[in-house]
Length: 211
Image (tube, rainbow, N blue to C red; front, side, top):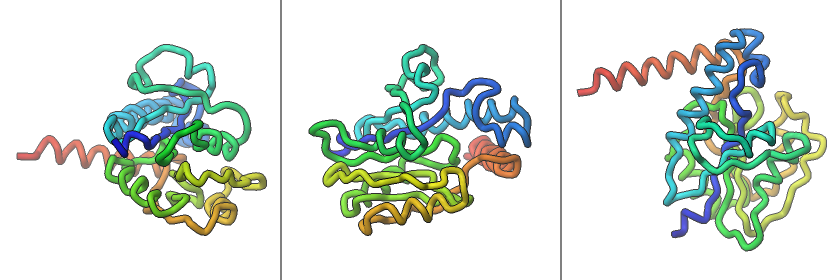
């Protein structure tokens, strides 16, 4: 099946209290940050289960979490993110295994609203383009994808990861065969957390009152 050759990579940190999302933790508290990590990742993995369309892999840090047990990854295959800065780790994850055809799409676990339709559109665009990027409200990006053939590893050295120029800097290092996905927000601070909570409440209310 054609779709099964595609790889969907969810890049995340193992949800553990007091680790990760430190900006959010400073503004909303460690408990709120941990609950967001845990719930958002579980809901994302549940939504993106589509074994006939792509192979879903959870790329986790710290690396030891890829070898550990626990249900937090919903029994999906796990692999370590490995060493290097964010750019090096992303490119290592996107690089195709020997003989692999199809495409690879990497998404963050702290971006609300990623659904199968979003993933399908990205893989569709990668039939005609070498790269896709999903812009984020804060100047970064929430998704990056590449075709396996041709695979030419770009040079991400010098990108100021975490700054407001990440999207711009990354685009400048990718080939012209690039297309942008829709813009989304990621949950890094208290206002974004409140927005996410309100959206979940609205969806829950709509489901309860559905005929």
